Image (cartoon, rainbow, N blue to C red; front, side, top):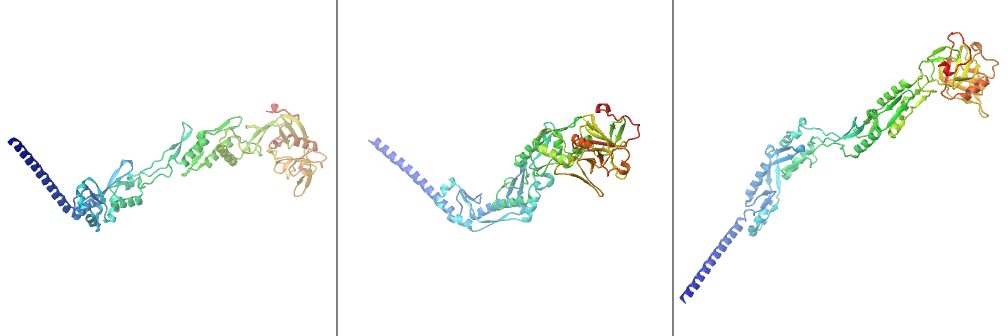
Length: 491
């Protein structure tokens, strides 16, 4: 019985001790809680951030000092191109801060009674502050940055097109963005960072760099690449029979020009030089020629305008059109005038031969003499010019058309007129009773070669524009028979 009573007493004493401990803990916690409430009447709760600065457990003055310390020790890290970093230190430009009364409002409005749970959350607050600094010192600090030193920076370079001699194609050379800073934008961005107390300034994100106008992906660049590669792929061949002139991709690349805005053009001077050199080698106009006459002797003729004559300006323009059209194959030059055949010996086998001394005209077709006749050429005062000329055109009278030859002191109607030197040409002269001899000296024409009707008609029906007319004076070599030789015999 006594044992059971003792056990009961011990249990009651144990419960009493535990109760006292609990009461004591509660009392202590209550005291701490109340003390916390009192403390946080004048201090900021845990987790309080003001303008990004932790002010937990600090008084208003303490918070202001902490924020001021951050401002006065403020540093901006500049992240630049090519992984370069630099800093702007607030002390170098006298950073300071002035607070308004709103920091007190934060303290007064915070709920001190919830201070225990404030340790587990963040309360971000902002107060009105005025950041002050020395403008001139900040400007100087910026100017002293390496990124502002022109000797340490590179200007941006646009993407460009480059011709590859191996592949015979153009390629894009990528742009170089460089690392040149736009001073005005960097100054603006730095000041905004100071105002907002940002500690990092990424120059690329703030658009502080000068950039290339054209990059490798720009439409203007890729379109120019395609066009120029089309041009250099053109195949052009001039066939002069005796030789061929080829326009290669390398040559076209030499002529191509591309502007800063990727507008494509052709170098006129270089192309004109090419066409000029080609024409100088192959044109035969105004050159000396040896000609074996029908009378067995050879003469050298240097006068006259017969021969191949390239229109150099128009040929350059036409070659540009050929290349732009992407054509491939043979191309004939644009000519002022053509000759009968290619090569230096370009007279061909169909021509008219005029011997002024003998007053005789011979007509050859395909190397054979088909008709000859005496003539009357220009009189002494208006002689028929000697040289090798081209038939200019042919004019023939019809029912509604009469060929009229008109001069200062004459007017004659003819049926056939074949000029070869200005207004000088062959024509029928029905008013003459005879031809040949020496009558030309006193009773000759004003320069034209007068012919019997049938001879003028035969010449008209045989020759075409551009065919040669060889006019010469007998050099004094003893006459041979007038029987004509074939072209093969005379060559």
